Image 1 (cartoon, rainbow over the protein chains, first blue to last red):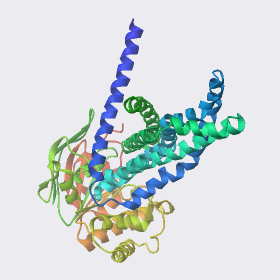
Image 2: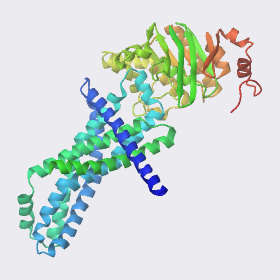
Image 3: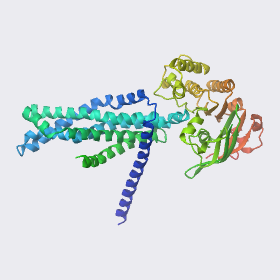
Length: 259
Length: 248
């Protein structure tokens, strides 16, 4: 009985701490929203972050998107063959990529690459007093450091998702048509018949939400890092874990609302 | 004039400032001395509004900064420059961009004028031709000098120094001390320096205040401090391990 009570106690504490953390992140989000519309916006900073989050993540997104599409085609083919419905492989890959795997996998890869870097960079700036130096020079750190990163996340993750969706479908086409001998015309026709623009748009809205989540959490964790190199390492790990969990949880609710 | 009245600050159960009262004269250099981890940096961060006291008031030119909102506090901060312990240069920017940062933020100067001021400020701290270097390429002493150039870029009235000579060799320590004295005299600055380098304290300070166990236990001229009968000050200045200051 004691063990059950202790387990419930631990679970309750974990949930409370997660909710508390989310509340603090929400407050930071409100602050980012307020500073986002106060001129002057430094375009150079924003483009620099967009390059880092977007352009430099293309390779990893192309790779994961392509292989995800390929494996979906392979798995789908074996399943559909039992019912003689191999023709549906193309549309399954396309729907899976645009609605779900494109946004989620892209967001998780960007979290690992750019979200962690945001936490590490801001964490280092915090422990080396660079963020204090900004405040001392009457320059708001939220405006200078967090607004450009959040904007980059919100705009670049959907663009990367388009790349991921495309690569996934091309990967699925390659496996389905060239390796598993599905008719090319049927493969493409089923995609155009069963996938509509709403699937793609909703997937991109999801991606923008994930971009917001990963950049906000990365910045929040780095901004509040304490305790030297160890603190920066801890902030980076926590940022990746918290962002990944939040992306997956919010994915369920966004899907429930949208589709 | 900077005035602190009954300033209290605690982190959890640890009381760091326990009713600090201090007046810092304008146009002079005041050195705050005290043990490592004794709350000197916390005190400095209160003066510039990076931390808020749990209780007490802090006046800058008769304005109580503990009651200001962020926008008004930023106006007050434009009177300040600060040299951080490790200089806190932005490591994603070049030396030139670091010194130019406050100018680009707060002045309408054209780029030519900003470049001229940056070069002038760097020259004043004995550095030329380093504008394009990154902070990581500089030695500790050079970083501190760039930090000082950045701190005085906007011609502030008050400059705060957080342990400016810690970690430097004796020659560089003397160079930084000279620089603080020259800068203070040239711009008639109010300087607040945190230090536990005894030689530097008497060289640069017009006034010296000692923070001990969260309170200012002495405040006076260098001669008054040097001849103080307070055993805590005596032990601190002599560096003896015997006395009222306990080694934890």
